[in-house]
Image (cartoon, rainbow, N blue to C red; front, side):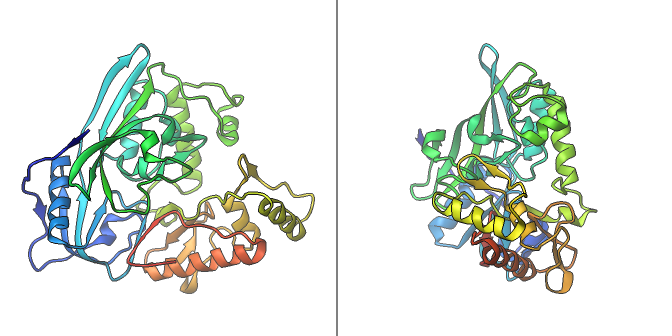
Length: 364
């Protein structure tokens, strides 16, 4: 479905002022924007993006800032901050509810609302920072569940045509932590729809750590509120629930994705790991040739709390996948630590870790 919306006014920063983007990212990093627009409805998002595109201006669309690393020099152009609100629920079939959420809604607040309504499907994705609009772009996943499993459709602005389109999961090309929308600026998500179960029970518990915490066997279903609480407890233990007073949460979440290796590289890497850490050490492996990035980082010599140059950035004291701002870090401090970890893992095991955040005005 394609449609074009009329223009409406939006709120922008005052002439002569610059908004620092560090106030809009979970790493608390990022220099100023030349022009900053707060778009509070889907229509305002469309209008602001279309206006910038038609004027040929550099444009950055910013959501919750939880999966982005912005350079210290900021962004020389227009930043549109998505702040649209609205959540709706519709019964679509017996035992099934379709949830529609605007892109600017806080993701965890939406998950909490589904759990309080007794809807199953999103509970394992509790505590993930950011906005609803980012979830299909990243194909957000945690504790054995991915957005792809419950996604119905996405409304988005096609920047090339200026039209609003509705795409299905197949058209989005969802895969492990990615989609056709990731690392491209050709479209802007406006709202997202999910299909959830009206049973009060979770999706089957697949993740071993979560199953152990809940005291159930893999594959069992559990009341959604129990699952949400257990997931939040696990994430807090890893510094993965935002807390302004805890610098271990001043991060972009997992900075590196788990590497997925094909044959014969997987066999070669496993041999190299055993040669370094010993034949009797259990190597965490997942289906499809996936290895644990956190495990590799630790075995390469980077322990929890490992500091970068000057100590302004460091690995989280709770989880080695998170690179954190200890309060006075710059973006370049985070990048220096990320390069050291990436190069150290490659030197030790021959595995090149891929970064998960989106880089704006900087590069790894």
